[in-house]
Image (cartoon, rainbow, N blue to C red; front, top):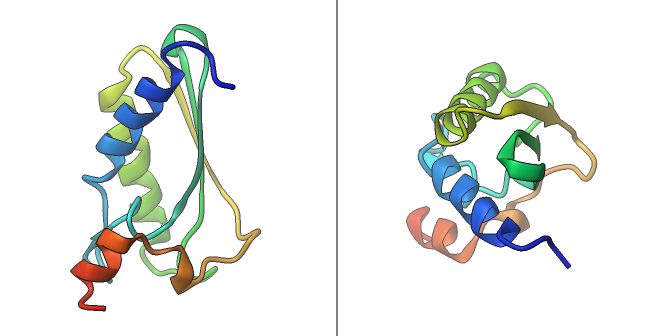
Length: 106
């Protein structure tokens, strides 16, 4: 069970990350399924985001990671923000949200 207010803070973080698109796909990183985990520390002073890319060799990876970092820093200006990349588990199309599938025409 998360600490009181944690769900609201995570929702706030996810809302901010919905403004960050994968430029090759045109879909935001949340609906694309690239965000695996968000942890927000006490008093929202630490934000840790675990994410992936559609491929290990994503040519826009650095740009997407920078966009995620910036969106979180703007949303939590007092926080130390860390965005970590993982490929375990590897991303697959099954991770795309229903809204994302609709956006992509499927």
